[in-house]
Image 1 (cartoon, rainbow, N blue to C red):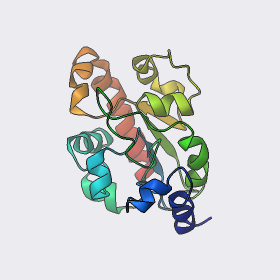
Image 2: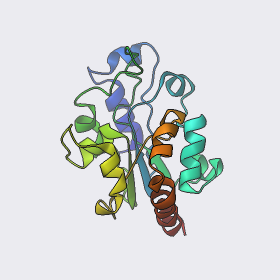
Image 3: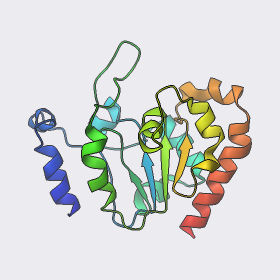
Image 4: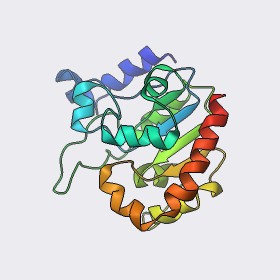
Length: 192
């Protein structure tokens, strides 16, 4: 299946047609040349409105963690972004609503099949980690990230790079001392 055919299939699916009718397109990227795939929660409202992922402080931090610049992230064709839901799910009481149930099951395999050169999948946040690592909801994100090497070479679990996680990072200094250098080494080896 081609990217354009998949895009149309997603847009006109009964679960997504209300977005299409409002002129909202699904937000994901899947270049055939992608080697590193980023799976995160769902686009925020700003990302959906602009049609650009990680174009904020979270994106700056993510690129810093990866050891790359904006040009490499957006223009090299080496990176793909496949959220757990390709649409902004709406606002909840304490932040954005979670990705819709069933979305990843329906669309991720078709999306990932567009990228035959994938070498690493970054799992950012609990939703992505629970789905791909087949974890129970009681599994602690901190434990998963701390034991990242258990999931290599296919997956690399991370916390979200949001500034909201600065407190978590200060309580878990091993993250910047051990996890990020290992991530940068792996990314550098893939991009050589």
